[in-house]
Length: 169
Image (cartoon, rainbow, N blue to C red; front, top):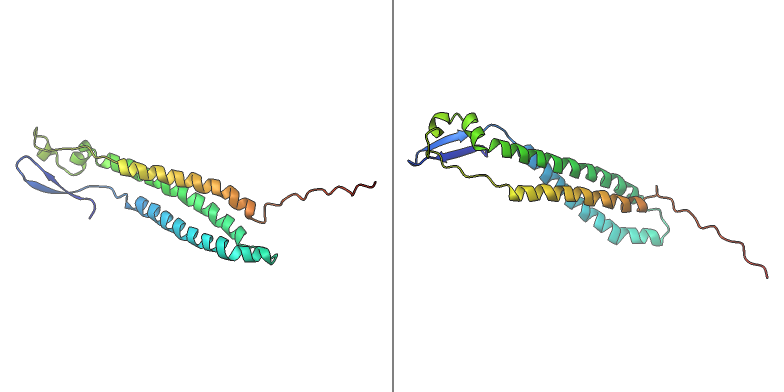
């Protein structure tokens, strides 16, 4: 159980505590988005390296480019929601793990009111903050790649150059 903690006092007495709150769905969604993005990148890489060049040589219309545009748009949304929920989960953890909240929520008031009885250290979220930052970085990266995928799709029509009539001399 990830919410199960033991608090040590100066006398080495341990009290089992279960904290309120569960932010694991946020982390699960974030990991799911990352795994799906990785797997899709492998599929798209295989297509663009091995299959699309033969389609272009045979003057066939690569319809996967349109599908890629839609999937990339969905992945942009997934990264936005994944990074946002991870940031929300980080804020929830920050609140849940404050000393005052732990004492209040876990009914440790009698145990921790005595001075020097509870040893408290501040929780650090450096790795979690980096994870949230990389999530938003992925969002912007996929958003930028959406432009290039759109240019490869059939929705992006190139304007044909006007041919000038041959000059008569």
